[in-house]
Image (cartoon, rainbow, N blue to C red):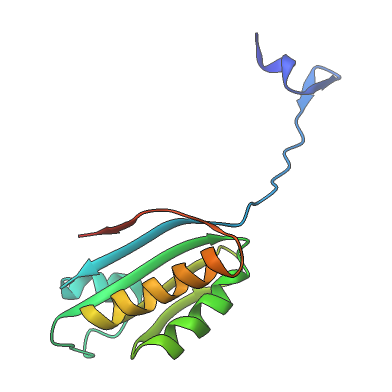
Length: 126
């Protein structure tokens, strides 16, 4: 098998059409507990927001627009601050105390799984 098995050859050039059909899934759900200040800076977050027992919650979801709904759930579920919402890539980053970030993440995952039928990954933590 070579690459020509995957595309159409035209004038010696291969044309490949790639189509993406996103599923309803959370592919990353991670908590960074007690992050170093440099992580805040590199993510464009405010390191002056110094929480006792600080944490950063990170999610990656498809379809990507679900990040807006997830942000709304997070804010309503716990005292967290939104760091980044990207409705084009499906990325959501929020900060707060460890317990609040965990509560927000749990609420998001529960809603997406139980109400919207999403496939949910395991929550990881560093």
